[in-house]
Amino acid sequence: MEIEIKLPVEHESNIFGSFDAYLKKIEKSLAVSIVARDDEIKIVGADRDTALAREVLLELLELSKRGNTITEQNVDYVLSYALEGRQSDLLSIDSDIVCHTIQGKPIKPKTAGQKSYVDLIRERMIVFGIGPAGTGKTYLAMAMAIDAFKKDEVGKIILTRPAIEAGEKLGFLPGDLQSKVDPYLRPLYDALYQIMGAESYLRNSEKGLIEVAPLAYMRGRTLDNSFIILDEAQNTTPAQMKMFLTRIGFGSKVIITGDLTQKDLPVGTKSGLDQALEVLRPVEDIGFAYLTNQDVVRHPLVQKIVKAYDEYDKKNERRKKLADAKKNEGAKKRRK
Image (cartoon, rainbow, N blue to C red):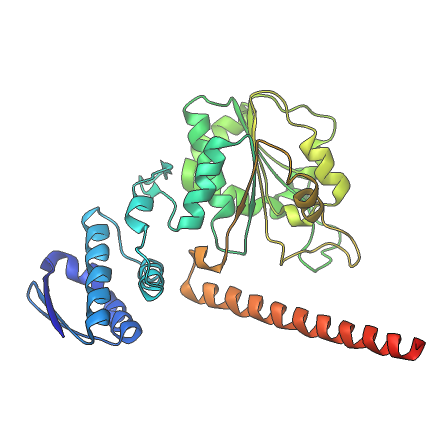
């Protein structure tokens, strides 16, 4: 089958990608041949495949018309829906702008999982954002916090995370107390600078309106009228998590983010995030957003890495269950 569609020349380079990389990906994924002559695009292939390719190109065109720079993640996302025989929701997601960076770039969810996460933050007082690296858990929470702060919905932003090394012992660090804890909090500063700007952050920080601090500093405080983000929550102990959750005062909103696959706690220590997910599931007004490798918005290779590790972990879990079953069966036979 052969289909022809109109694709304005000014959008072709955006949709096709550098050296036609996106075009080649669409051709390979859908088993079609695409030929471009001026603003005429000819798609050749099986009936279903050409129809899917047409839908993919038209959706990317609409995204481009809205002023977006098409990324490989956009192409992969639309293609994954097409291959599953579902209508992509990328255009409806794209219209939800959370806020803008200091350079004027819009911050918005890029996947259905991220859209659900943002909607939950708007609706609930406490939200747990659980997912692998690169799914935008912290960045979107930070954007929501800054937007609420600028609209005077909250009077203060508090960002915190456990000060724990990622599998290393760094020993004694030089400098004063702030210098010692800053390296652990650097990802939070990076997001703040990008969205709010260094000057605005420093000005509000000096007034005490924006606070970035280790989790240990939260004990004994009551946090009213604040937007509070606890990052890397998988590295909290049960006692720390309970302490944090009981700090929440009136008029506050709390986002707790974590990746259950990347814990840096000592071996044998239970994660406070694991326990909180079990204990708080029946509690109303608490939202749980679970992001997956499909929501990864970093380099496409990160998505493949996360998926590979997930499959590896599942395989090991199946092997362990099988080994345990055989061991139990052997023990039963010996008892007989």
